[in-house]
Amino acid sequence: MKNLLNFAALFVVPWLLLVLIQGESCRSVKIADMDQKKANRLAGGVWGGKHVNLEVTNEGASVEFDCAHGMINQPIILDARGGFNVQGTYVAEGHGPTREGVEADATSARYKGSLSGDLMTLTVTLAESTKRSDTYTLTRGKQGNVMKCG
Image: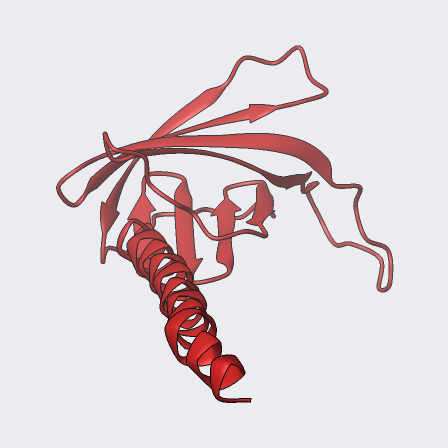
């Protein structure tokens, strides 16, 4: 019995400690990765410009254009150069009143942006369109100048 206790003290206990320490190390790396992603997120709040208004949250963003609106349903993570490239939706709006309960079809869109301080260049490309991409310049903290179709 004494040999079994000596074996446990010499081999089993250090092995268990090593496993526990390694587990904490992995958790620390995961937490650090999550903190880094939060630090690399596009700053929340309003970004506005001519014909566009972008409202950024931790979960994504909503976009208003003169005659359309869109959604980004994922956090906007910046790359090392301060840019982003995310998938979202785009819904064209028509002139005049809309019928209650009738929702326009959403089109898949690519939202690609780059930052320079508090300025953003945003390019919106529709997936199912031959139309060229539209590019906007937005300023952080500024409400956009959007003229809704009427």
